[in-house]
Length: 420
Image 1 (cartoon, rainbow, N blue to C red):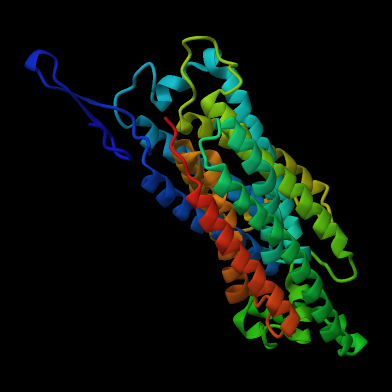
Image 2 (cartoon, one colour; image 1 turned 135 degrees about the vertical axis):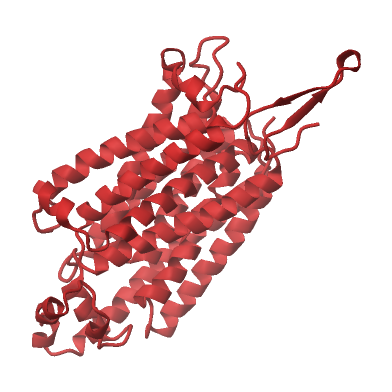
C-alpha cells in the first residue's frame, strides 16, 4: 500500500517475509495537491503586499529586493534539505544530496530549471516597479492572467493532457476576461484620482511632508497619516512618502512593465515542468529525472544570482529617476528589512508548494495559484486604501473582476488530473 503525501510504507510479502521500505516524501494525491495550491495561493498573494508596503514607506526597491532574494533562496534550501532528504534514496527517486552530486548526468534538466528561475526573477523585479504605477491589484491581475493564458496552455501539452481540457480551457477563458476587467478597473480608478487631484490648489499638489518624517524618525509614521484613505490629500501624501514618484508620468510605462512581467511569469512554470519531467528527452537513458526539490533548488539559485546582479547594478545606475545608492547604504538600511526578509520566505515557500502540487496534479492545474490577485487585492484594500472613495463604475468593475477570478480558480482546480 502507498499512502500519498507522506513518507510511504511499501509492504512486500515475498515468501512470507514482510519488508518495509521508506521512499521519498512526495505529494501524490489530488487532495494533497489542492492543499498545496491553496497554501501557495495565500503565500504568493501576500508577499507582493509586503513589498508594496515598503515602497510606500519610502524604502528603495533595490534594497528591498536584495533582502528578499536572500530568504527566497533560503526557503529553497530548507525545502531541499528537509523534504528532499526524507526517506531512502533510490535510483528512480534519488534524494536531494544524491542528485546534487549527479550534475554531470542531469545538467540539461538543471539548465531548464535555471532558465525558469531567470524569467521568474525578471518578472518579480519588473512587478516591483509596476506596482507603483498601476497599483498592486491591477498589476497582479494582469500578470496572473497572462501567465495562465500562455503558461497553462504550454503546461497542458507538456503534461500529456492529463488535465481535463473541457474544464481547463474555460477556466483559462475566465482569466482572460479578468485581465480585460482589470484594465477597466485601472482606467476608471485613474479617472477618479485625476478628478480628486483637480480639486486641489496647485501648491497643495507639490507640498512636502519630509519635515514631519524627519522629526518622527520613521519613514511612514502613524501620526503622519492625517488624510483619509482615498482622498486627494492622501494621494499627495503618498506621493511624497513613496520611493518611486509617479505623478506626471504616463501610466503606459507601468502597463508596459506589467505586460513584460506577465510574459516572463508565463514561462517559468513550463520551464520547471521540463526540468522535472524531461518531456523533450534531453537526459541520457537511465538517468533519473530531477526530483521536484532538486529542480526547485537550481531554479532558486539562478533566480538569486540574477537578482543580485541586477539590483546591485540598479544601486549605482537606478531606473525611473530613483535616487542613487550603494552597497554600504544598503547594508546600513535596516528600516523595513525584517518585512523584506519575510516577503522572500513567503514567495520561496509559495513557489515550492506550487511545484509540489503541480508535480502531483499537473502544472496546468497548479496555475490556479495565479489567482493570487484575490489575496493581493484584499491586502491592497485593507493596507493601502486602494479604491477607497472611488466611483460606482470603478466598484462595479472591481467586483466583476474579483468574481471572474473566483470562478476561474474553481474551474482550474476542478481540471486537476493525476500524474502517474
